[in-house]
Length: 426
Image (cartoon, helix red, strand yellow):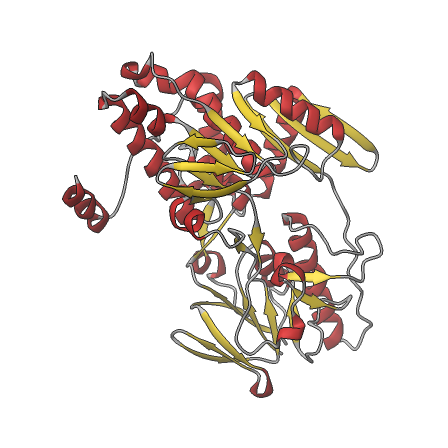
C-alpha cells in the first residue's frame, strides 16, 4: 500500500509515525518546508523567548533509519485522481491512498491592505519576520525625536482574541514591563499601548466564562487595552481602522484573527465546505472520492454527533484523526472493520503571562487559573514537542526566562539580500 501524505503538521506527522514499521505500507510525506514545527509556541519565537530550533525539527532527521517512511520536499500543484497521481512543483508521485493534512493558512477576510501590511502569525517564517520587525521598530524609536512617530513605532495592535492573540498580547505586556524599559532607557518616557482587538463579546470564545473573565482581568492588569465587539476593517498609512470608527496609529499590526483551509486543483468544488475545508465521512475520506482523505484543520467532518458543525481547528483533533486514520489503514490490510472517528475533547488552555494562565477540563468539568494553570500549560506544551532535544532546549530557555525575567535571544538576524535592501532604503 502506497500512502502519500501532503503536509507534515500535527495530523500528517502523527499519521506517519503510527504507520512506522508496517511492512506492507510505504509512506511518503510531502511538505513545502524541510522541517516540522510546533505552532502553539510560534508566538514565543516571535517575541524572542525561544529560538526557532527549539520548536522545529528536520523531517529527514526524524525519518532517518525508518525504512517504510520517506520525506519529499515539494509543493503540491495539482491532483489527478483518475490516475492516482499528485503533481508537485518538482516532480510527480503516485499513490494508492492520498491524505491531505495541509492545515490552514491566514485569512484576511478579503482585506487587501491588511494582507499587505499586517504581520501574520501562522508559520515559523512569520514569527521571525515579526521578531525582526518589532526589534527594528524599537531601535528606530530609540533615536526618533518626533513624539508622534515614536508612539507609532512602539504601539502594538493584536487582532484576534483567540489563544494566539491572548498569548502574544500577554507576552508583549511582560516584555514592556520587565525588559524594554531596562534595555531601552531612551524610551523611559515614551508613550505606547498594547491593544487586543476582537469582534466577539469575549476573549477565548470557545472556553468557559470563568476563563474568559480571568483572561480579560489578567490582560488589563498587565496594561493591555482590550477592545471587544470591535473589528479591524482596514490598515493603511500606519493607521488601523476599527468598526467603531476609531483609528489607532501604529506600525505594528499583528494578525491573529482568522484562518482558512486551502483549495487544490483536481479536487472538485463540491468537496469543499465552510472555510474551504474538505468535507469528509466518518472515516475522514473526502466525499465524492474513492481513496482521498483529509485530516486536521483542512477536514470538515460532520458525522461526529458531539460536533455536528465540524470539529474545532485545534491540535488535538489533528493528532487524534491522524492516529485513527493510521489504525484504519492497518485494519484494511488485515480485512478488519474500520473505526469511525470520534473526537475526545481533552480541554482548552491559554497562557497570559508569568504565573498567569487559564485551563478548562471537560471531564470532570474543572477550571484552573493562575500558577496551577500556568504549570499545566507548560507541562502539556513541553511533552507535546516532537523530540527530547526540543523539550530540553525549550525547558532550559523557559527556566532562564522565569528566574531572570529575561533572555538573550533578541537579535535581529536577516539574510544579506534583506539587509542590503534595507540599507538602500535608509
